[in-house]
Image (cartoon, rainbow, N blue to C red; front, side, top):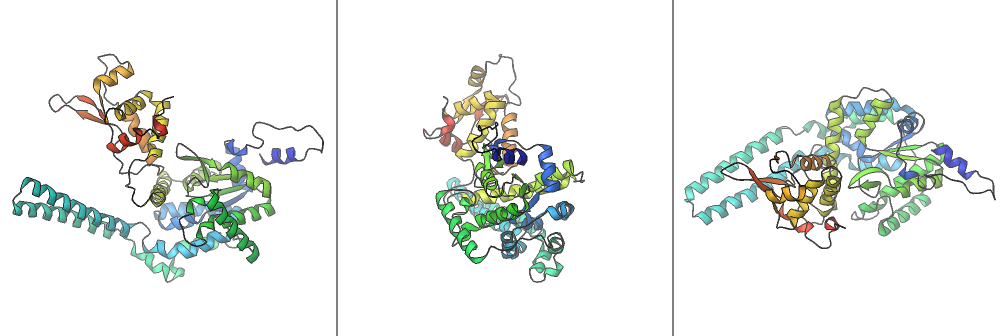
Length: 445
């Protein structure tokens, strides 16, 4: 890709302009295996801060697999000064609770209080004997205590020692070797100040990268642009394609399709071409492991891919919660519903129509109505009707776009006597979202 771009720029003055389908639209070209092979063997592989910090959250085997891949890349690995500065600044916070154990126990305590209140309210409504109500609360407390103790037992206290003695830290030891001589310099003070100002301007005007960090304080929202500027400076020197590896899948870095990242933002691809004449590729950590297995013939166990993907999903859920207004409850959002419906319309159109029809009927669609809109024969079974919906929802949950605790999008309602499904229901929150005239998901035109 880089050769064709350079050639088109080298046309003689006054010559007829010539171009191809992707000239000026390079971001829309899906990278080939050969593209990835080229950037992994001759390019510049740049890990984001979250890639380094998440090493503490992986299972030790998965952590070692990723570090082995970075080691194997050798001189192709290069870290911007901003990444290392953020790594050291944020490292201690991660070490205090690398796997979210403390946060999970805190969330559990909140749920305990809510559950106890539910029991009290129900007991009053039924005028339940105080002794029976007390027994219920006692059983509830015992269950929460048991789960909390099990979670506490999984807390990795060993990592807390690393914050006071980096010589004990296996992650620091490996990274020190991998990144020796491969960390870029800080920008000179005038250039750094100019980058901060430009970064803040971009945040204000919603120009990538980094504008999704606008809620951070001081100059912190400009951090992503400082990193991006340092990548441009190094790429202009090396004149090699760049592979940016990041667990961040927000829209200020990625071009999204139905909520899923499919490539870098076109603005970023164009900017790197203009400033350094270099192609830009982006992958997530699990994709880097997969590519290392396919392109570099590095053995990467399936368990490592699964563990890295799990941590990535949890990080995305945290990012999504950070993006939500404080008064917004977790669960289904207009973006999530629209993404699932978009995929259903392609793969299971009847189920998509059933959800939309249920939304127009107070959240329920009868069995007869499903047969009518689908054109099914009377003897056709509806067994497995919700399976495509569950599969697609699970797909988006696996990529952190839908909370794991979201209510089923389409659930069967059964007759108590016959055990046969009498219809299907959707959550009240989804009914409200699809019932809003402003919601594009209900536009049937």
